[in-house]
Image (cartoon, rainbow, N blue to C red; front, top):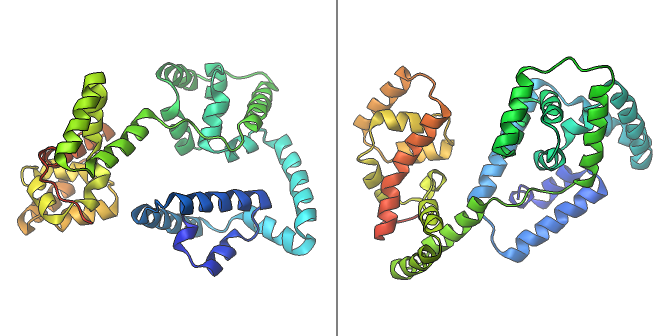
Length: 320
């Protein structure tokens, strides 16, 4: 999706140095996007912005030694010889740090590799990852496994020599079998797609289909209704509809809802409130303590609720 927002020359520069297998996989994904005919311009813009921000962050942290080394070896030795040298470097590095490959694995692969493992094993692996990656993995584990692993992390016993290395080796072996695999889509993600599809239909037809879903599963029907309008949809709401939806929201709640929100959503909301409310909002933000994540989510639901009601009534307008 990032490449689709670039010109061909820039995209080619970005792909230089990647392994042939990676380039082939990316080409397949590009073909899938083209065949589906479902390019999401807003999502592409978000990805481009995220990529830009990551570049800015890396520049502030200094250049990448790994990237520099790889580029230097390729330019001096050629791709094939450079790959052989990199393999030797990795072997030497692994002797000093057995968790190198585990840290390089993506989140989905790690979750799959850790499935069914003892909480102690999971705790050891999580303790070797960055806090952000550990948090992502914990969020994807089952409730029972998550609690047991966290309890182990709070009191990690001093492991005998070689135990951590054996754990790393075992997880490494499992990772090889899950290379490139992704987690199964969550039910809520599937229902979100259904909700988006239904929201584009005429009200009468949409309500009939929802009633049919309710006959089989009332909880699912309620979830689909809720997912028709979410916090992330705010930029796509027409200004007039958003203004009407925001009328009953208190400045304090709105301040909490906007905490660390996407800049596009912040701008959309700020451009659709009165100067008086904007001044009150700024005052609330200046006095506000850092809210809990649960408070932020609750406040955002409160902002979205009037928009959901308008959607159910068939009066919500969206930007074409």
